[in-house]
Image (cartoon, rainbow, N blue to C red):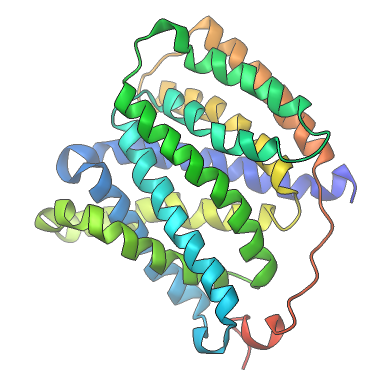
Length: 294
């Protein structure tokens, strides 16, 4: 597959990154009321409702192995959201994203001969985070590292779900699992504050994270290798810096600007070398996975 044929997938990934960072910045307004975990639960609960309503998955006709992969993706998705929001509550948005990017960076290292771009991106991440200053919140960094581990697993699992399910069926299975996991951590904090206005805000935020970006990433991972997608995600700190500066007034320094340049170069390099052939359709996919199948 040529770089030209992977261009739409790269566009999906870029749009997803921008939407996620805008959604994360907007979500900080809810932290004072329902906390990071409550905001995570509200998003995931609405996302589950939206995906099920759109896809109407016939789970009773799906293979147990496929359902299991989608359910595990849901658990990992809940981990990303919960841990990332806890990190953002303690760190500047760009710092949290840069640390979280270590997950996709590890995925990028999995491809033999594909270590040049992740290494370049890692240098950019160091410039963005500037760990030598010693001023970052260690608890926030720990949450971001946890989100990084979940993000790496998410990339690998999302590609498997994209290959096993057609349309949005995979997300319609994984999101309810994610919402169920998040309920244990976020519902107690959010429930006492729920009213119609907060519920409506939750719908809008769920569209920003995770409905639109997860859908775009699913489409991207049908065309890109996981290693290329993981390294392409090195643009995430750059998006976070821009969004943080515009919406949260978190102004980056000169070294962080240099880090943006490095991760941008790494992302373009990964995008040019990371397309993948179309996966073979699962044997029962047309018959049982499409929301329009009879």
